[in-house]
Amino acid sequence: MNVRRRHISAVAVAAVAALGFGTLTACSSDSAAAGDTGSFDVVASFYPMAFLAERIGGEHVHVTSLTQPGQEPHDLEISARQTAQLEEADAALYLKGLQPSVDEAIGQSPIATKIDAAELTTLEEHGTEAGHDEEHGDEHGTEAGHADEHGDEHAHEDEHGHDHEGGDPHIWLDPVRYAEVAEGVGKAFQKADPDHAADYRKNTAALVKDLKALDEKFRTGLANRTTDVFVTTHAAFGYLAERYGLTEEAISGLDPDTEPSGARVKELQKIAKEDGVTTVFYETLVSDKTAKTLAGDTGLRTDVLDPVEGITDRSRGEDYFQVMEANLTALRTALGAR
Image 1 (cartoon, rainbow, N blue to C red):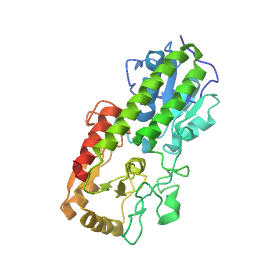
Image 2 (cartoon, helix red, strand yellow; image 1 turned 90 degrees about the vertical axis):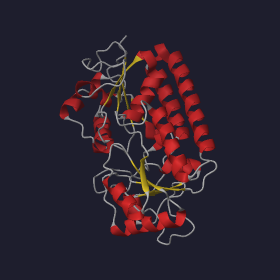
Image 3 (cartoon, helix red, strand yellow; image 1 turned 120 degrees about the vertical axis):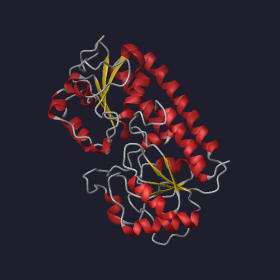
Image 4 (cartoon, one colour; image 1 turned 180 degrees about the horizontal axis):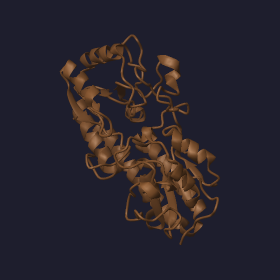
C-alpha cells in the first residue's frame, strides 16, 4: 500500500535520493522512485536517519537516502532534480543544522510531514577547533562537551557555510539521545501511517532497548581507564564524551574540513604529553593526513573512531551498532580501560 498523502511529510526531501542514490536495504529498490513503491516512502538525509527509519519502519517502509555511502554528509548539495521529487515521498527524516542544502530543500517543500531529529532531543554547544581554555589546567575546555571560550561562540556558521547555530548536531553518537530521537520518529510514523502504528510502536521499543544496552556497554567498558582524554580530527564526539565523562580534544572543529591552526597543533602536543594520550583518532570518510602528521610529530599511534555518518566497505561493521561497538573497543585501548 502506498500511503502517500499529497502533503503529508517534509520527509519527502529525502525521497529525491531514490533517483540518484543507492538504497539502503531490501525495502528499497534502485529503480523505484519514491512514491511508487507500494510502501510508506521515507526519504532520509543521511545514514543515521536512514537507519532509524529502517529499524522502526521494518517491512512497511521504503527508505532512500540523500547521501551516498562514502559521501561526507556535511558536503551534500541537493540537485534540482532531487528538489523536484520531494513531493513524491510520504515522509522526510533529517537533522537540521548538519546539511544546509537539505534544511533549505525541506523548508521550502510543501509536504506536511517533516521530521527534524534535532527537535526530538536536546542539542548542546560543543567546541569547534580549540574550544579549550588557553591555560591547560583543570579542564581542556570541551570536557563533557562544554562550550569553549574561543572564537565567535563556536563559529555558529563556519567558513564552509555549515550552520551550527542550533548546537552540535552529532546526537546519534550518544546512544541515550539517539534513543530519544528514535522514540520521536516512531510516534511520527504512527501518526503518518496509522494502519501500521502497532508495528512501528513495537519496532521502536525494540530499537530503544538495543540502544540502552549499547549505552550500558559503553558505561561498563569505559569505567576503569587511565586517562579521560582522546584526540580526534573532527569534533563529532562531544555528546559521547559528555555522556561517559571523557574529554574530546579535536584537531578541527565541527566541520571536518577545517584546517587547524599552528597554535592548536602545539596545544594538542602539550595536552597529549600531560594527559597520557596514546592515540590520534581519524575517521573513514575524511582524510587521515592531519591525524597522521600530528601523531608522527608526537610519537603517538593512530586509529579509527568512526562518527557513523555512513557505512562503506571500510567501516568496521555493517550497521550502526557494529560500528559503535568497534568505536568502544578503540576507545578502551586508547584510554587504557581495563
